[in-house]
Length: 412
Ligand code: AMP
Ligand code: MG
Image (tube, rainbow, N blue to C red; front, side):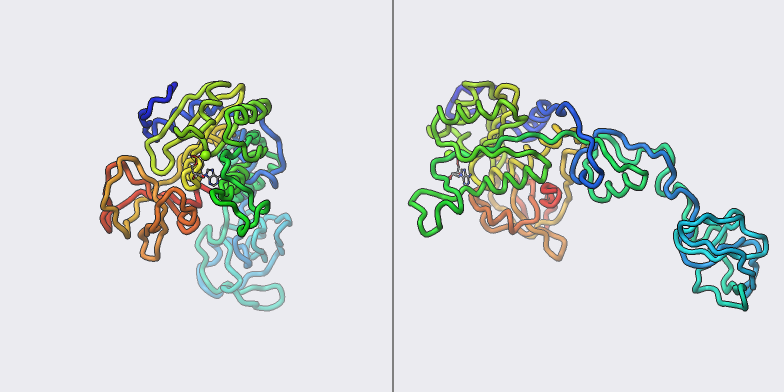
């Protein structure tokens, strides 16, 4: 959409804007082969097919005695102990009429079909054990392949790796994994009012200035998404300076991400700067907070402009930039889980825009609302553990089911 600045451009529904944004996010070319140890949170670029069964053999899940269950019709049967099988050793076939001493994780000897746990036995002389309970066939045996069958796809291309997934990959012998390349992201903040913590002490802050808070959470969010971040600092509110920064960033970055300056004010130079150097495709989303949002291209780089208000940039990042960056890495699961939970609050005035409210789950299984939902109040995002996605034009009464999205999931 080419918005020649009419005073009120039409707002795009969020789902539309997100769907269109994601069509622009083609997976980056190239992948990295990295150690499985280093692959947490990266996106798998290959199907992982198991060459073996896990566990590889039937093995014992208890310390005890491997037996033939048919040989133990009654409690109290004494059996000679014919072999000892610690974990990591090979078992000999079980001599008929005997028991094998066995330990957790050790292979079940051929012929045995059950394990009697140590606690259900007692010594009955030199190398003789008395079985005190009648075993059921198959008891305390972990079957070969009960976790993974040979030939199974244990993790699919496009899955984002978790610590558990790394363990599973290692269990089929993978010490290296092929993963999507890290997106290179140029970050810059705009706003002549911004100063950096550490450069000016709180007591020395000039009137009209504020600390650049967005730069900190945006950097952290990008790092969590495994991006390579180049920070271009604070760009002054001037067209020429903005154009210059964009041009520099466009040369070797996958995405240029800015915050601030994408609204309709005269000091908002990001939009005209992008239009003068490239193209701007999306503009203004029907969501609250976070209306000003822009997607475009500068040279070969994607451009995303986020609103400057801290909560707006935080939420638009989580709801739009996050899936965009995951898709660039080849991820297939992009949408967060939505849970229906009862509201422990009320919203009496409906808003025209779809609203994402900062809430917190309580011990009763419902959600409570942070009192101040202003887009400048970053405290709400720390207090909250989730968002309520409230459709446009909706009021909420206590007890109404609402759509809850966990921040932990969005921040992972
Ligand atoms: P803008 O989108 O540039 O009109 O900014 C909207 C509001 O967000 C203004 O109050 C700005 O001062 C504030 N803001 C913009 N960028 C930042 C930032 N990096 N950190 C904190 N506040 C910001
Ligand atoms: Mg500004």
